[in-house]
Length: 441
Figure 1 (tube, one colour):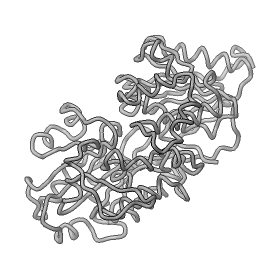
Figure 2 (cartoon, helix red, strand yellow; figure 1 turned 90 degrees about the vertical axis):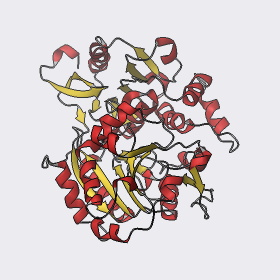
Figure 3 (cartoon, one colour; figure 1 turned 60 degrees about the vertical axis):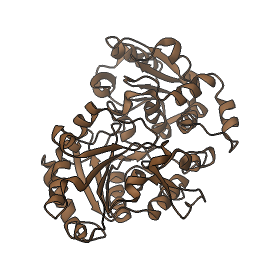
Figure 4 (cartoon, helix red, strand yellow; figure 1 turned 180 degrees about the vertical axis):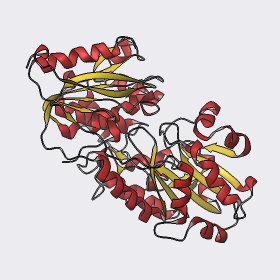
C-alpha cells in the first residue's frame, strides 16, 4: 500500500525526553498500550488507604509500634523512575511521626543500584523542597565499601551479598518501588529495591552476569524460573523490609494504584494488577515496530533507551525492523558503559565471547548483552535509533543504525522512514509507552 493511497491515518503521541512527538500511521497498525482504568486524583489518600489495608501483614501504624532501636529508613527509587514522591512521601512521614517516630530518626535512602547519585536539584524535583530541607537523604553508592555490610548467608546462586549499611542496620525498614514490566527481572518493584537497588557492585556479578541474562526466562513479564528473579528474591529474604509500598503508574505517569504490606505478598498482588493492564498478548509478529524509550526521566541516557527496543522484540518478525528514539539528554551512559560500547563497536559477538568468561566483568555490561538480543533477531541495519543529543561520531559506534537529527527535525525524519516502510506494504506495530507496556507471547 503506497503511503498516499490510504486516507485515514491515526495520530499517535509518543514521549521523547520532556516533549511529545506525534506520528501518523496506517489505521490498521497494531497498538500495544496499557489499559489502566482512571482512578481518583488524591494520590496521598490512595497511599494512606493502602497502608491501612496492608497485604499479608498488619497495617503500618501497628507494625511501627514494635520497631527496633535505630533509624526508620525509607528506601525510594532514583531519578530514572518517574514516581511522583512529592505527592505522597510527606503523608507517609506524617503517619510515622504521628506514631512516635521522631524527625531525626528518619532517613530517606535512594536505591540507585549501579546508577549515579542524584543531584540536589533532582532531590527537590523528586521529593519537594520541604522533604529536602527537613530530612536526611542519602544516595546508595554501590562502590563504597565503607557503606556496605556483608551478610552471613549467600544468595540463591551462592554469591556473597553486600548490602547498604544504613538499610541493614535500620531499626525499621520501609521499601518503595515502581512495579512495571522489566526486561531482565520480569517485573520491577518489591525485591528489586534491595537487589540491585542497595547491593554492592560485586554482588551483581551473577545477577547481571552472562549466564543469568542468557537464560530465556530472564525477560520481560516472566517470573517463573527467571534466574534474575530467583536471585534478587533470595537476597531480599536475607534482609527483608518490615513494610513494602508498591506503586503503579498509568500511561500518563500518574499514580494508578498502591499495594502495600509484606514484601512478597504485596508485590505479587501488584504484579497481578500490572500484568492484566499492560502485558497484551502478541497475536502476530509484524514487519516494523515503532517504540519510544518511555520519555523523561527514563530516556535520559542511551543506556536506559535499550529497554525500549529490547522490550518490543516479541512483536517483531525475525529480520524485521525496529524504529526507536529517545531524549538522551545525558548522553550514552556511565563511563564504563560508554567505553564498552566504543570498544566493541561493530564487533558485538566478540563482546559475548569475552563476557562468557566469569573472570570478565565490567559495570553495565548487562545492558549491552540485552541490546544484543535485538541485534540477534533483526540485525544492526534494521535497528534504527533516532536522537538529538548524541553526536553522529558517537552514535555510529553504539551498535545501532543511528540517526543523529535536530530536535526540530526529529518527528519529520522518523515519519519519513515510517512512510517508506508503509509504501512497501509493511505491517506496522507501535508502542506509545515504550518499555512500560510489555507484550507477552
